[in-house]
Image (cartoon, rainbow, N blue to C red):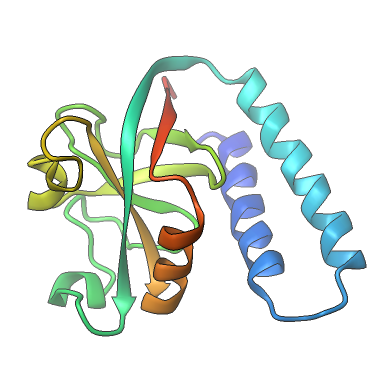
Length: 159
């Protein structure tokens, strides 16, 4: 795996940890978060975009009601272990497994999983491709679903 993308994924995870904490003192988190945001934007500019796709974002989670057995075990259909801040489910006919994606308001994610609802484009009524973002807890997933845009333009990288 490209070292550059490993750093990006790690920075995305760190960014989520910093901004998901309930700590009321933001100065250090804000400074670190801004630096990570800058690194991700720099990486996006340096990467080669294979294609851009307008997609419908949905969420799924490992812990809480409404999840299936494989997801609860963090087992993906590609064989990779599902990780919050890293994994998304896609239609592998449009976006092959292990491709890196840039999703606005989220950063870099990796296509690790798929599902029937994603393949059938259920959330978009069959009109747009669906990208399902993985979260550990249902509460975090619902917070994201209610507070961020549902239709976004996603960049898929060549490597």
